[in-house]
Amino acid sequence: MKKIFFCFMFLGFLFNLNSQNLEKEEVQRVIEKFFIGFHEKDSLTIASTVYSIDFKLLSTSTAQDGKAVLSPMPFYSFLNVLLQRPSDANWKEKLTGFEIKIDGKLANAWVSYEFWVKGNFSHCGVNSFNLFKGDDGWKIVTLIDSRRIENCNLNSLTN
Amino acid sequence: MIKKLLLILLVCFSSKAHSQIINEKLVEKHLTTLADDQMEGRKAGSQGIEMAAKYIESEFERIGLDKFESQNSFRQSFSSKDMSLFNVIGVLEGKSKADEYVIISAHYDHLGMKTGEKGDLIFNGANDNASGVSAVLALAEHYKTQNINERSLLFVAFTAEEMGLIGSNYFGKQINPENIIAGINIEMIGKESPFGPKTAWLTGFDRSDFGQIIQKNLEESDYSLYPDPYVNFRLFFRSDNASLARLGVPAHTFSTSPMDKDLDYHKVSDETKTLDLFTVSETIKAIAIGTLSIVNGNDTPSRIVMKKDEPFK
Ligand SMILES: [Zn+2]
Image (cartoon, rainbow over all chains, first blue to last red):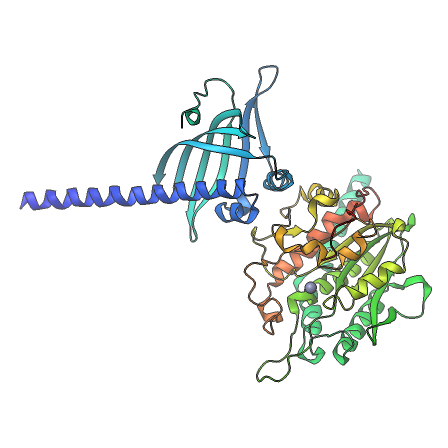
């Protein structure tokens, strides 16, 4: 009897693990879709991945004088820059790693990246996404990134 | 202290006036009248459009607008393609810069009626473009009440847009474009934008700094404006703003329409009941806030330069 009970426990655990993985895949798919929109200058695709009214974009960096800076960017400014980018600008944000954590309706994704412009390496860093799962699935609520040029150990050079 | 109190009172009253004039009730009245079956789809040259013009004239009269170039009618009549056509124009003279004009426009014609079929035959054109005309009328009433326009405002309902921007083209030939500071054109603001509630998009965003002026003015509000996401549709060339933009005027079109998903576009189902009054009235309020610095003479958007080989459509 005890054996059967543990079997069910274990099955339940596996099932849980599996649905967690499906959720993680879903979160990753939303983030990848955001970057498809980013690369194709398609603001509708981007808009479909964000929780539009409350979407927050912030960037962390270090100023010339060594001071740490947190700069917010309105969503419309982000889209202005995106759409006004010349078509030959050839920006490429390569996503090099995903770490996703989920609790209920909240997800956090830690996504490392390399940024390339016209085939030349520009900088690397991390995009930290917060997502919320509402009636129409996972949507990005905040995106905070870091940018640096040191310690980038360029993964994509090798592939 | 008394000064402070007076200031607070003034702020209260002006913000009250602001929210009172542009509201869903007023918008609904304009919309239901203009998109009524009686107007038979407001086709240029038809009886239906005559009724629509009469309504716009009577509203201009009620609001207390002046006539364009001291004529005796709000109508700017002309003929084209064997039809007698008319734009409807109302004027609110500027307080200190009366010879600088800002145009607030929308086309009021639509497709008319279907023939040889049964069922609903009327293209009501509630979103396209009774919603835009409702905005022009509401903004006229708003600015008349506010009495803050340093520049002169021309409220224009264009005819025969659907036949190829005929009304706005004619209008463009009657004015000196150098005196026109900006063109605020409004098309299809009755459905929630693809960017979410309280957002709109603007055509030809990067052709002048008009859009960025609007975005700056909206910063303190909870409404935001985005560049036109449907670049491949070439909408900048397909509405009346194009007739003015060709002359160098920074003239752009505001819209909220989800163009890729709108099943009622150019269908008989484009009726008032498919529209969201909240979207219409919030968008009109946002246009008022967003264009204020242009209307009161503080901002002058950069001119539009068209390339010579740019196709008309
Ligand atoms: Zn239209």
